[in-house]
Image 1 (cartoon, rainbow, N blue to C red):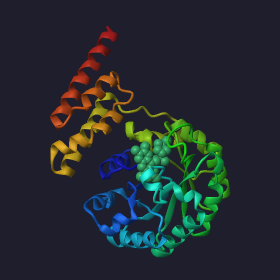
Image 2 (image 1 turned 90 degrees about the vertical axis):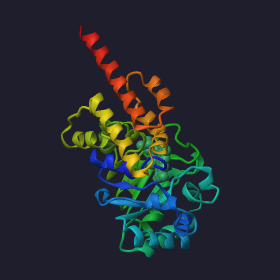
Image 3 (image 1 turned 180 degrees about the horizontal axis):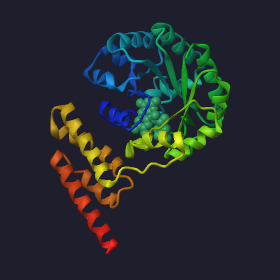
Image 4 (image 1 turned 180 degrees about the vertical axis):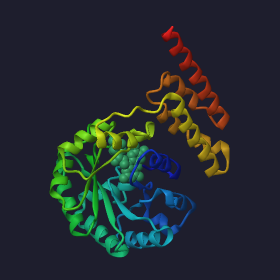
Length: 316
Ligand SMILES: Cc1cc2nc3c(=O)[nH]c(=O)nc-3n(C[C@H](O)[C@H](O)[C@H](O)COP(=O)(O)O)c2cc1C
């Protein structure tokens, strides 16, 4: 997830059970410019393997060359092609989900990248179609398989939906039944039972969890446990959650090398973490002003103290 799945967050997810990671999407054109930002997007540690680099772009030759350069440069375990991004800046240049309505170009991009990096696997992430009148995920999946794509993740929404409405798991099931490669289902998986239910109802080979991990990275561990033995593992307690949040902040400061911009960059992430916390509205307001580690740990201490006092009051 762009702006979310940076190296630090990916590693926290990995520690919490995520099996396969993908970088934030990277523009093929950005690879050629080799700018600093692109370098950051491509940066990962060995501990994150298996990891894929996700590329977007609409020009087959450029995508192939960019994929080759990425492989030379960082040696990922796979390249993932983004055919799902709904953002105007991307689709206006025919990238991301725009290629769902231009199957010849989608096909040529897939073929060119597969050929460029063989035998490294190339996977693809798609939406179910451009809009409700042009749902074509099964057809797109067939094209991708013909071009040698090794696995397909389907986000069960159209581009027109953005992130609203519900993910259409019927279409995901159709793709999983039709495709001869592993299909990973994605969209609205927010707890282990939901993943188990979708696995039971469809032939998906895997599940991709996005937004739910932003407030609960331990969802991966809980889900694996639930799939293994049907037991619901408790979420970490409030102290453990704050430990994880503070560690995320600490790691970000180390990574950035400068405290204030690092912490300011995490404000939205802190707000996501506090989803479901007691008093989360007040916490969100406080997070709008944090700029140091001390700011965040003071909020943590005060929050834990208040939670402790109110549970003591209830117990009495
Ligand atoms: C902030 C944000 C950034 C995202 N960036 C990407 C991206 O770079 N590449 C991608 O394939 N999907 C991206 N997505 C889409 C998610 O991967 C996922 O398909 C979508 O959120 C639905 O899954 P969920 O309901 O589990 O969140 C992004 C989603 C969000 C909310």
